[in-house]
Image (cartoon, rainbow, N blue to C red; front, side, top):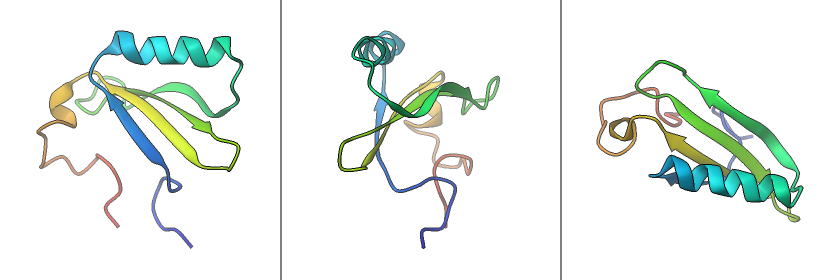
Length: 86
């Protein structure tokens, strides 16, 4: 069995909030089913990010996220809160 906080998934990190919101809007307009509803994780912290999960017809999970502080993911090697460390 998989260990860790996340199920296995494909992840895409957006560098633009507007692009993340545009994809979210299109997803809602197409009435695609969310595996996990849009939410903000770790509000007020360096690792704050917006995220949602979709599931394709073959049950593959896809996560789409945007970090409020790009340094949290693009350069913050010492941050243990990012991702799974198993």
